[in-house]
Length: 259
Ligand code: NAD
Image (cartoon, rainbow, N blue to C red; front, side):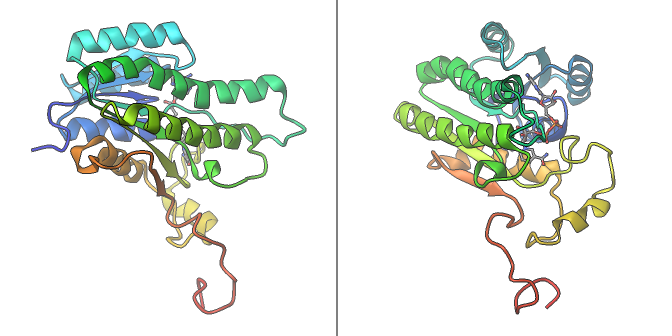
């Protein structure tokens, strides 16, 4: 028996990276999965590989009309949507002075407005059915500051606010809304050169677990939130960061790495 037997999930940015790992895990756990992404070729190939319980739909999360038509198509193909994983995102490294208004709006458009549109689009169906789970991908950069990430961090902090409000407004209608906050994860976003994970680990020497995460480790957190195991979890922030945000080591003192 799978943890998502009988559930229908839509996963944005589902064609690669963490979205791909989540699509794979959800299908393995018995869900019917709508892979929704702008990457048509990759999304269709993944859906074909995963079989009859996965299908690809082209969706640009910034486009409200596309949300409407994709949701109607998913419902017609698979039935009512039980789970939305708002995972699609983009990253941009620029200082505040380098970041133009257009840059800032582009990142917020995908990472924050896109997730808002997702919540707004699936909510009516979930309300009508009296149940649902929405998982919003934020980041550790939604919990702290980071140089060169003004647009990204702003968007990911915004996702926390969106999640809290949605958890309140939708919770009493049977819909749980939670956020997931990964640290470094081995996907194209954090590893665009495709280096081996072991090569990236030294960058994470000051993270208590001292390594980068695999996308499947974040998918496992989303699986928990999507499943009935999380039936009383609402408005929570699940940090999947190997301890990155727990604190800063006093290097050389007892308890620090290497001492
Ligand atoms: P990724 O770049 O591998 O995947 C992102 C996916 O989102 C891609 O498939 C891309 O096509 C899709 N996407 C981008 N813009 C879109 C749009 N407008 N509409 C639909 N799909 C769109 O990155 P990832 O690491 O898998 O990132 C997944 C999520 O996790 C993102 O929200 C990201 O911000 C977050 N995150 C990533 C890391 C990390 O280290 N990789 C850390 C913290 C949070």
